Image (tube, rainbow, N blue to C red; front, side, top):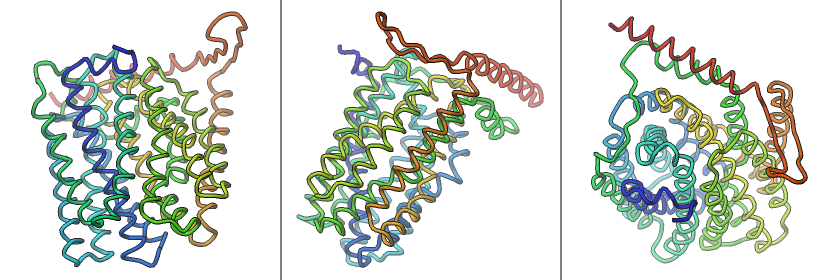
Amino acid sequence: MSPTFSSLKFRNYRLWFAGALVANVGTWMQRVAQDWLVLTQLTDESGVAVGITTALQFAPVLLLSPYAGLLADRVDRRKLLMATQVGQGVLAAGLGVLVLSGHAQLWHVYLFALMLGCVTAIDGPVRQTFVAELVPASKLANAVGLNSASFNAARLIGPGVAGLLIAAVGTGWVFLINAVTFFATILALTRMRTSELSPMPTAVRAKGQLREGIAYVRGRSDILVIMVVVGVVSTFGLNFQLTSAMMARTEFGRGAQEYGILGSVLAIGSLTGALLAARRERPRVRLVIGAAFGFGIATGVMALMPTYLSFVIACIPVGLASLTMMTAANATIQLSTDPAVRGRVMALYMMVFLGATPIGSPIVGWIGETYGPRWAIGIGSISALLVATGAALWAWKKWDVTVRYHVRTRPHLEVLYPTLPARRAETAARLGAQEAADRQTAA
């Protein structure tokens, strides 16, 4: 089997991959339908309203992620995932019924977005860490990359299908179809062979476990750099469902189908980035910083595109850069984090990654309404370039970075930061001592 797809030789992971792909297609369909419903049916093309909807959907991540991470470290992850899939399916069905009955109002969409955000906040950390139970540790980077490929394959299919369905039958049916797709993940989880799972260590119940996760991250400057870079880019740059809707509708005068096409074309680059990421055995911090810088350049070019067709083409490198950054960040943190605190660390990462959206979406929506959608994209470009440059300069100074170029041998470009391994070992030792003290106290 090709190294790119090596994790698929494990039955449990194959089931997970297939179920997640179906559910992700439905999720992307709902995101497009939700934004289109708010933008064209419940408001007079209000970018602020779309931004508020997005913000409400991701706001619970800021409050619930630390506790969700603690749950992911304590409980049966497979059973918790079943519960979150049921919750998301019920909420999608409820919104669909409201729309089809003709009773949907803007505040209804706000409320459902908030409730969905609560379920998603719990789902995120356990979804990220559960992958480590499906494959051996040596295949974790590959599995994370394929997860991103599944997500972005769905992103390639979902928006286009949603655009066609909205034009054919309306947004309400899109929500109901999404509700059905969650049962694919539930079926996959029930069909797994529990004897073939590789359970990670679970955290014993003790005081101060949330603080323990925060202390672990504070002691890891590499994780902090990743979180800062991803947080800034996510806040101001990863608002495509908002900016694409505004560009399609107000800048180019297009309809739902053309809006869906933008999401699908963006996913072409994202899927390419995910498949490339699946081949990397060990992603690095420098890849996160480099991809963020590339994202800043690509979005700057996209904001300047004069026609709908040129804008569509410019979406491809934007998707490639953004997915490379996100996958490298996810895999780097998971592979370098102690399994005993991985759920809490990934929860903090998800809080930064998704929790930044409630802050950024209304701001970006206001910029789009006030100065035009091109500036809404441009602010993301400027922010990405600034944070990537700042992170690179900081790392150069603090980690004693040296760069070597070899003409005749590979790798030709070698980037070394020798102080990082020592700091990681120091943090791990401190964590082990704290866990021992907690167990003694509990006893």
